Image (cartoon, rainbow, N blue to C red; front, side, top):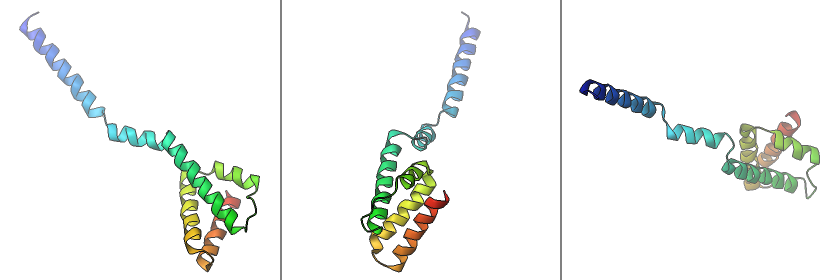
Length: 114
């Protein structure tokens, strides 16, 4: 091969590497994978749902949460689950206060209207 061919091959390889590195974004890819339902999300979601169910059952004075409500919890999206978890944490922290009662009513309304 002549020197011109080596230079052209070298420039083509450099251009390919440049395109590869410009389009490769590992933090973005990892963040998308985490949001798409990786195993950590499944574990976290189960823990969140268990927290919501336990707080609701304790607020309902020991009665079990109806199966229909449990199924509705499984159909909620992540934003609704996060909202319910924050309300459930508020109920657990506040105890028997008006704020806890309002948080319980908000969770119940979200379940009924979802």
